[in-house]
Length: 417
Image 1 (cartoon, rainbow, N blue to C red):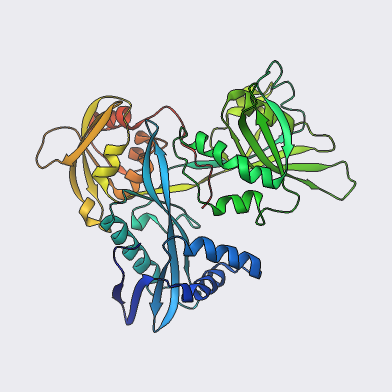
Image 2 (image 1 turned 180 degrees about the horizontal axis):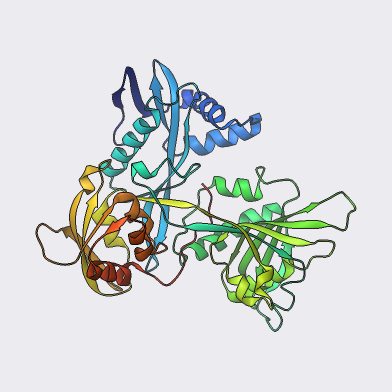
């Protein structure tokens, strides 16, 4: 439940009230969201969306008695460096009605939502940004990146030769909904950047929300336990054409054998030309298993999960650090002023502490909240951000930050929300 029930602000000449959306207002919520995005949903899709949103914490922004904007957040958990798991609000369904733009509606929604999360002690918020220029001013920074790529048929032939720990089977959608969530949950608990999913996710992957023709490939290990899966479709030029693309919507593996076995199958199906994958890690390990790594052609790299530290000291205490040390963070955070100022971070592989620094001596790193969000999962380079003018500090501070905040692995969020 929202700790702050209502927030009313004057934006220019417009009085905007942000408050929780009641059950009798859910149709208006969906109308605003669909109008903003240009969606046309049938009654079954709206009924499902209504149930997903109503079960969480929907907010509406009202201007002149009309709902002008929407937002909500899922109760999630983010895996952070050190394989620690931190509560995170998964912000979603953000929209402003096309007739109510440029009037402070989005800002009012973000203000009310972050105030509420802070009051409830939620340390992190995360979202997927529709436009990259929107959320930095609210303290969100891109923290994971996805890649899209294509691979010609046969390029992964021999990838799984010698593996005896992956037995493949095609399963139906009902079985997929029973087995896939538990596999993902096991994988995401060790994958920095991934999150605990919400129930509606499986409706989109293996339920009524899945695209027509979706198939489900399961891998079992030598003991018969599920160890990975792939959700894919075959897009054919016409019904009997020998030319088709294998579209991989989701692939998760607990073991290297499962990872290799799933890709080897997908990349060598008869009557297909290529595999097309999206939402994959920025640095896909598959490339290293190919005889010719150049055949995996990256067609795009884009940001995915944007992270916002709502309670800065709590969030920094919850992750682990690659090297023992201390660092003073001089943070600019005008949108959440409780985070502003100098913070003394002391941490290492076994734990961390963060408290107001006062005038404590030590290396000082100067940055804003959005930049800290990008650094939080270890995927962004301290030195690259410094060169880009996003971080200030003397060479000792930059070196210390690089040693402490780096992880040596690439964070990845496999989950859409």
